[in-house]
Length: 90
Figure 1 (cartoon, rainbow, N blue to C red):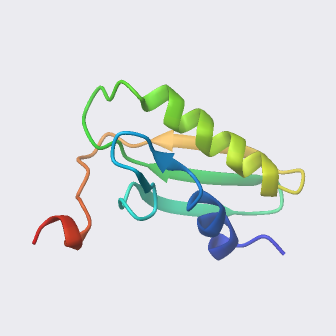
Figure 2 (spheres, rainbow, N blue to C red):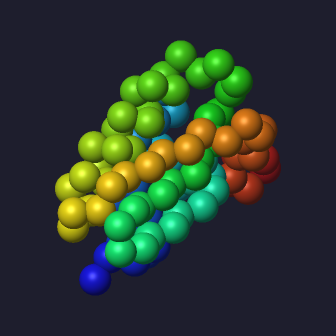
């Protein structure tokens, strides 16, 4: 059964190539919604106008296609600032 935890586990394999950490580890995934028809991922970018934005969104879609079980995948890039994980702020 596909649920939020399984989606996040799959997203742990999507690595930001500039930082070398997964999107969930970087606190870039803000919301995951799964229903019978759609997986919706809401995410933020580390910087506005990130040059890797398209690449990262496509990687999320590609990874979700592997676990979607026939659902559509929707990725929404939120217009809000990225807040680094606590480990970055020490």
